[in-house]
Image (cartoon, rainbow, N blue to C red):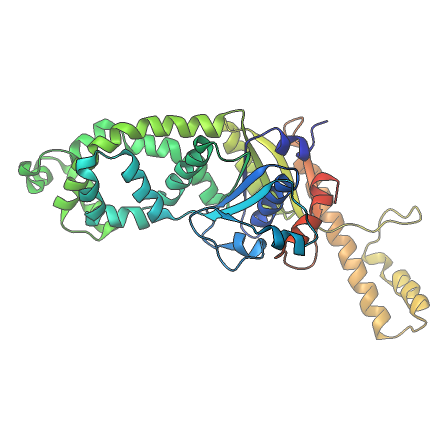
Length: 382
């Protein structure tokens, strides 16, 4: 039977995806730490703009360059890593600039970087962050410096943008569209507006989206970028190769809440559709049902019996016993509901996909020792 440990050990890239607020970033950091403890040179890349990764690793902040977690910081958490743990955060604007520097024709680089439309596009264009995240991932893979790369994606809706980024970029770069923008400036945008209603509508939408009224800047941008676009399709193909390749595993992180499990099912289905198969599921913040003495269930109908048992244990049948009994019964009902939903969810998983449960720790995880404590649940070991 495949375990989560098998999945992490046998892949070069682990992509952590899921809904917001389920502890996805924490799980990604914990997987990365486990890789480092196992002896691998590991980097955790986050594209989550909330910057939770730094908090999870006990750091004040993170930059766009890989930052090594100091060995003495690991040691302070009682950890002795045989490998290395690094972390970084996507710098959207910096990644665009680096892409231009690497692939644009030398004579066009400065012109592109100074173009107002490019500056707006590289910082605010919808989906731009996800495009650059995939590009950054490919750079890390192709650089050959890492034994393990863990990618922490934004919440589900943006995670789908991440998965679909290569295809969207490919569609965007469709030559039949770009040719309209790369027509010589002397053709005149006003003329295009008149002769083609579709073009006029498109230009109007671009003005509204970008706030840039000088459409000549847009034309100049696309004309300057034409040499770069020639290289982009190869990057799109490479991105698909990485995301769909056998070296990459997708791990969905979820909670047992009904709506969140629905998001996880949808995300798994989209992964299959995009030929990026789900390899493992982590169900975080589970509440465990207490069972003892052969009694299977404790529900609201048992509240009085529980209260009597608690009162006997405390030697006081007062308010504290009633409150504790009510809290216990509510917790049992919550835990049982989670387990029932999880059982249904598990039936829909592809055979062989491991599912691990991480208990609710009742507090935020924001240091390396706490991340390591999750390994008992994730990998069955401390």
